[in-house]
View 1 (cartoon, rainbow, N blue to C red):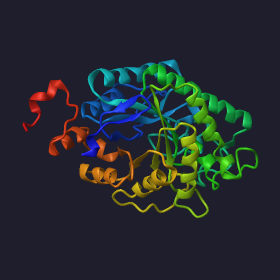
View 2: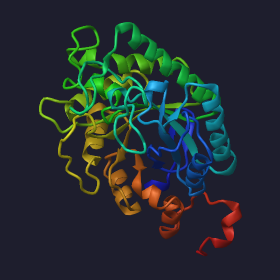
View 3: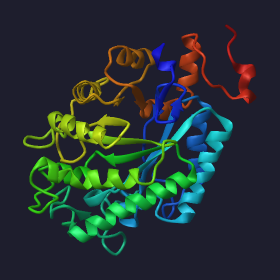
View 4: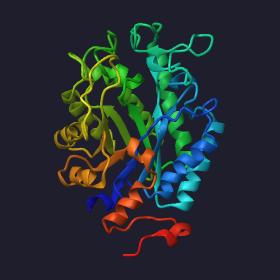
Length: 353
């Protein structure tokens, strides 16, 4: 099966095409990872996935989605993440990546209530324009050009810490209505300066972040970018925009575009069905000539293999399925008579061929 063949990005070789997709766990304290995260990510490495990508990890305090989200703006946060990275490297064949993120106007959410916190409880949200995600939320602070430049520097510093922690892959989160996506979309970005207006200006923030991250990484780390292929809204961000953006990202030495969708416009209808986002990844792969990650209600090895064989993506990102079954990769390998990493401590349980 192609699903169990290796693939290389720069000098980073993944042993198979199965990726644990970034998923928020809302379990950190002051942005610091703890025993839950250690077990959560460590168990997926023991389950044989080719690549683990940690949940959205904020590059500055206001970048968190919730008060329980991970961060990497301090050395303490990086040190706790390094413990996870070291375990994965020492006890499996998996690679591990980090998703660098900023929530923008979708931040300051209480993990307990799933509602935006008051300024006293939480923090002031920021955005390219004075447009809240939901009408019940407060108007975000509009970023100045100087503040935008400071955020680019925050991403650079986060990338540096990530490399020092030993991560193999850095993924920039430009999807799901978080800050970078807010800049990309004409529905959330109504600026008239160099960061607004035409598509090139709206993509400028992302491109500056890519340059900043690339200034820190080497050939021993790969760079991914997650985007929303479409936001399902009239006059909003569409797949054609994603294709053009991906061409520009490829020219900036981005190794893979991880193609998700939605998240920026409240109340839209998303047509959920098995593999519903796969055609978006296929469009980007074929039209921008860049490697892509396919994601979205992919639940079986057979479905994943079909995506790869049809040339719709290069990696398979699993989210809820990998939560349900940390051992999806190794069990799928057994069922299809494929070789895959399995911890030597558990070899007595491996089915005989």
